[in-house]
Amino acid sequence: MIKNKIHLAINMVNYNLKIIFANKFIYFMIAAVAFYLLVTAIMLFSEGTPGEEDIYSTLIFPGLLILFYPVIFNIQNDKDSRMLEIVFSIPNYRYKIYLLRFIISMLLLAVVLLFMTLFSVIAIIHVPIFYMVYQVMYPLLFLACLSFLFTTLVKNASGAAVIMVIIGLFFWIMAEPLAHSKWNIFLNPFNIPSDISYSIWKNIVFQNRVMLVTGSVISILWALINLQKREKFV
Image 1 (spheres, rainbow, N blue to C red):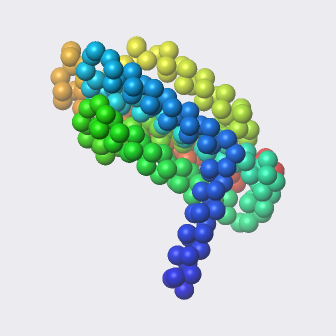
Image 2: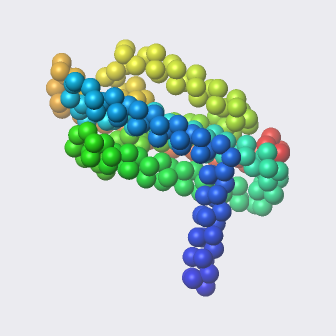
């Protein structure tokens, strides 16, 4: 019995991995890797010495590209392939399947970021690999949960994508004013300001991470609740 359940779980993961990697995901992955290699090459041949804060910033944009497609187009792909009616017809299955795909996407993102960070250690500067990925995952997880929420609210992947781009542009424009603020989604914990004591900075980073985790939990739960409204999706 246990062996059959394990086999079934493996088959389900493999099936959903094929769905995640289907269609245009490979283009986002290629773009993420190309951007990362380009920035890494620039830092490698620049005169200045890159620091941990530079590696953190370098990982953010590739991470956004990797999570963008599988999270936002999660439901849309099922709708386009006419699988949405089947998914929603099985009681509670939609929660499991979409949550499973979301978790797989986040694990995949973490693995890719680990390899990128490892390459940075080899090519540029030594940084704590797992701690770096751990910190990068905070804003990426929040944006992934928020993207999934807007997908269930708008019920259209393209519309959700536009909203997330607008949000991203807003925080990009506000990057300098919010550079060291706890309200900055992309707060860089390795970029310690010179005019703030270390203890105060650690408290700002902690508050920022708590807010991101809280926002992530609220967003994912809200999205799962929205999935109850079956008639709005099919």
